[in-house]
Image (cartoon, rainbow, N blue to C red; front, side, top):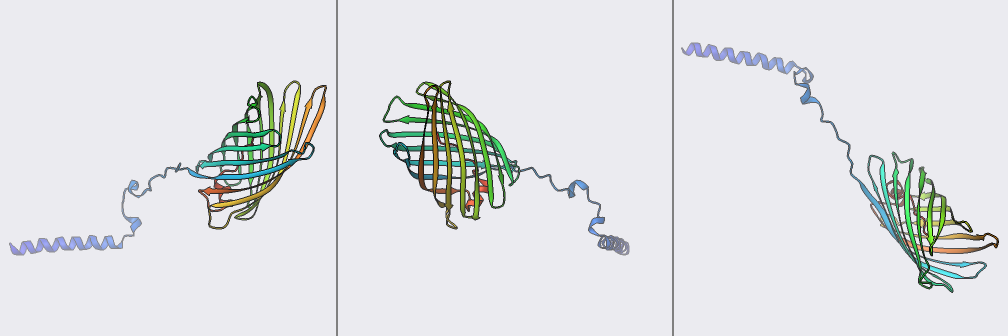
Length: 288
C-alpha cells in the first residue's frame, strides 16, 4: 500500500514538474489570457473647468481741448473666464466707474458683458458677446441712459502677440430717446516677456437716430507689468478720444480729449500675464 502511495505521489510531482517547466518556457504573450482582461478601460474625456481672471482698480484723469473741461474717474472692474478641454469658454466682465466732469458734477457708470466663445487650441478663438450698461448723472437727476449691445468677436493668439477684433449692434435709450448703437474695436497685445506686455487698441462707437449722430473714436496705448511670482500687476497708459456730434440742419461740433490712466490688478488662476492670456480672459467689454 505504501508502495502504491509513493508511486502516485511520484507521478503527481513529475506531472507538476513537467507543466512547471513548460510554463517557464512560455513567454508572457504565449499565455492564454482572455482579451477583455488585457484591454485597458476606455478613457472618458475630462470636462473640468479652469477659472482664471482678475480684479482691477484704476484711476483716470483727462482734459478736453476745445471745451477745456477736466475729468477724473475711479474704476472698479472684474473679469473671469471658465475654460474646459472641450474648447468651449465662458467669460464674464463687470465694470463700475464713478466719474467727475467739470461743470457737470458726478456720474455713475455700471455695466456687464458675457462672452461665449470657442477656443479649440491656443492659436485662435471666436464667439459672441452681449453687454448692457447704465449711465446716471448725479448733477442732472433725470439724465439716465441705458445701452444694450451684442455682436461677434475673434482673436488670433501667437507666441508673443494677440490680435483681436469685435463688432456689435445694439440700442441706446438716453432720457427716453432711442438711438441705434454701432460699435467696433480692434487691438493688439504684445509680450516682451511673460510678465511685461504692451496693449494697443482702436475703438469706434456711433449713436444715431433720425436727427442726431454722435461718433466717438478712441485710441489707447497701455503698458502692463507683473512682478515674477506675485498675483499682482500694475498698468499705466494713455487714451486719445475724438467725439463728434452732428445734428441735421444745424451742422456739427467736435472735441478732443487726452486721458491718462493708472491702475492695479489682482490675478487668480494664473502664474503670469502670458499664462492668463493662454487660459484666462482674452476679451474686454466696452465701457458705456
